[in-house]
Length: 377
Image (spheres, rainbow, N blue to C red):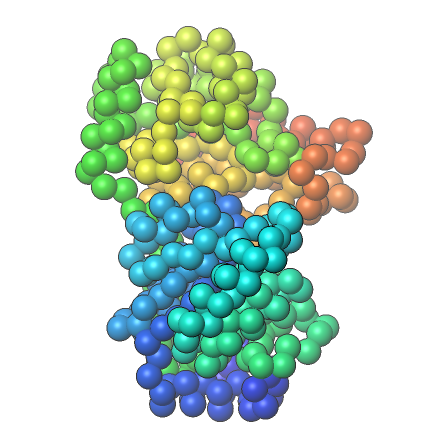
């Protein structure tokens, strides 16, 4: 089975297979991975991180990400250490020269055997990873651009889901031996513990009630960081109200900043349990884990549901559907339309009508939700 990358791949002056074979002959004890993105992006990366752990079971794997992800990384078994990336244009922040130099010095002192750029196509991120001076560096790069000197590169895939795109980078070290079927069996991760479940139960009790029938609830999550990714909240309210009237317990979740969205739904669904702003990453995971169904936008919670095996109805607005849809189309039903402006990378819709959101009707979502709920009975 050969490498998916063009042969030869230049970087350290050797074809990719020779580099990987050389890596296989050497001890790989310290690995660094750059992935400095938001929650959904990080959950999507857990499949590749788990595969990396399977390839190097004895190595110390260090994740470099945004500061918010420190707590998240502490739960992911494939990650041993976490280092926060200082403010940098890669994450839309102005950098401090002193903080940046201290970070680079620390990374060099750690003497990594292998560094992987799993952040994206590499226009900015490759330069960061190369500064760490790992013994071997694997990167994605723009398809029409040669890989940077000092790295073994693979063109950034323009097709496929995000978890599978990231897995492809590991093919550059294929001679280390991981069968294709084993790599395919590795799944996403978002660990939930009994302590998280107890904390969720306490939150529900503090709300004055808990779901009555003990058969789980429908979790409705109407928010998303980007407005361009949001289905209209009034339509979420209609869906939640109708499902409530049909006898389903409704659990509303969202970040504190999304309180106006949740309150609009609460006014229309008086029996809904409102946990907006009251959950952390893990009690949110417990809320999704206990659900019979999640109804949401194409945002981080959809990937948590995929990791936990919880059925979902995802209304996908603006984003690249093939890249961000959960892998199992029977368990995770994605509703979307394809206006000419899609996919877009704007946080706000630039069109007079937010067509990719408006095209998805309440009736479509309700019918798909009932279909998913019937499949669970």
